[in-house]
Length: 348
Ligand SMILES: Nc1ncnc2c1ncn2[C@@H]1O[C@H](COP(=O)(O)OP(=O)(O)OP(=O)(O)O)[C@@H](O)[C@H]1O
Ligand SMILES: [Mg+2]
Image (cartoon, rainbow, N blue to C red; front, side, top):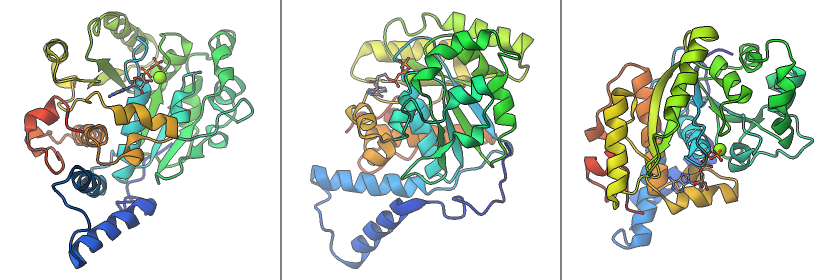
């Protein structure tokens, strides 16, 4: 596994794949003839937002000098780990990065959301962990998003927690597989199951950064102490580079006082690790997986898509040591408040 910033890849063509053509078509149509849609109408605004989102996706972002491996973890279920993994990964890829999603959850939700076949016979991350199969043999490209790849999870993985116990180097099998994976990558995002068992430990040994999605609901912080203690334990005994680098507030609903209270509490508690960008509660985000898509391809102009693009931008800039200026956030047409981006976008 290596990061090669000089590769002629998607970065050379910052808006990869067929979507760059459609964006270009839209632009040329707009400039050469009168607008086909009324931009004040909701549908016109949606179209404009989509074009803006595609344009933003083509923006160049700094690429990390070395592959950044981010472990998306929170043992609380349903907080947005998988949604965050796949949408951030797609956002980074649409910005020209080469990104691998490792689905480490037996539920296989990340594989489903990326439209990756993961029925029982498909070579999967189970084979990598338990049978030492090379990662290269299980990675599949994600259709529609150039530069995005996925190592799928099949239902076999449900037994892996137990099968791993008796294997040599049980905590570092994923790390070894990733180290032996010689493809150039800018980011690896690992989607963890909602538990702190051996699968999550394997992810924490393989990666340096932990990304914790926190749902803006009551009880949000409960259980976080245990997660942080596990991070400390893995750092002390197995992986000295491990640290919590990123906290992302998800399912933020600015209309409720509870959401802003939770957000404030998280920001007070964690400070600089918390991204300025938060992810709004959005129907589009929750609909996208049933079409085997990320929200970026399902509805590029939606608030959910724009906020994940912005979160990816913030992560890339922070990683390059460039301070993130929320007042420069790309809100898209019709959105003009820094506050709305910092606290999640609410117009859909
Ligand atoms: N911003 C959002 N707006 C609306 N719905 C969302 C949002 N983020 C996630 N969801 C929905 O919430 C549910 C849980 O999300 P997700 O599967 O990403 O959580 P998870 O932490 O991976 O869950 P698990 O612990 O089971 O792996 C899903 O149905 C998803 O579509
Ligand atoms: Mg999940």
